[in-house]
Image 1 (cartoon, rainbow, N blue to C red):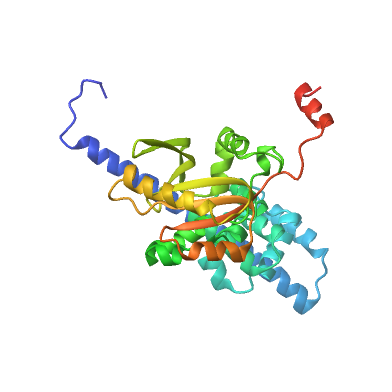
Image 2 (image 1 turned 120 degrees about the vertical axis):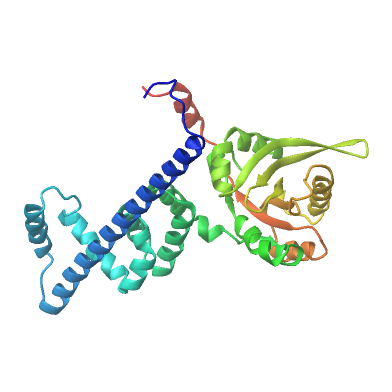
Length: 333
């Protein structure tokens, strides 16, 4: 086909639609193949488990099964004795075929192996399986969230979202605020002051966004707000893509005090009035402190009409030793 060929009207749009259809079909086909493979592995694991239980087959029979299956299907991967043992454990973990078909078959086998290795209860596996499907987590990202206990910390902050936000958004708002936040990746100790922590968070903004969770977009640090001819500065400002609202984060290096919320209330009102678009949802405020008294925080939130959450954050227990700093500065040998 030559470059000067005249294309029919609407050809470019039609070709774009066709490409989208092909991509969608290929994706669906890949998902279908994956689901069939996971269900096959569950069936193999169930058969091994049933034979061992009903007929007293020993553990060593798995080695023989692996040998015979690989001989029959030399081009098929995943038939090692080690993987067969995972299939058996998979069948033990999910005795009901319905949940395999409806949930875990939507995940690649590698994801399911991680869930088997990391959790002892079905509830934990289900929670992280659902999150991995919802957010499209890769295997490495799933491992990272399990290590960080992301789901266990989500929705744990003290907030007034249920009272100050519409029902359709209050649940999501509560879910996006963790407690505690893990800032150990910053490399600063508990003695760090607020500006030092802010700077470290911005210097590590990629890891910070991962810790915050899905949907946060970074706007800026020490964001200027001009109100009534006076200048005010927001510690950290984000926009949440699902909630469609600004999120103001204020950092306090010490213990939570009720007066901290007064300043945050002002920032929320100012952002709503000076920055937010008319179609944006109400701005949300998150106060992060090193420690808090739960009762004091709950009472402090009762009188507020702005959506606020109070959560703790964790830093390193102590600063790195001189020896460690010298090793890091000298680099690899």
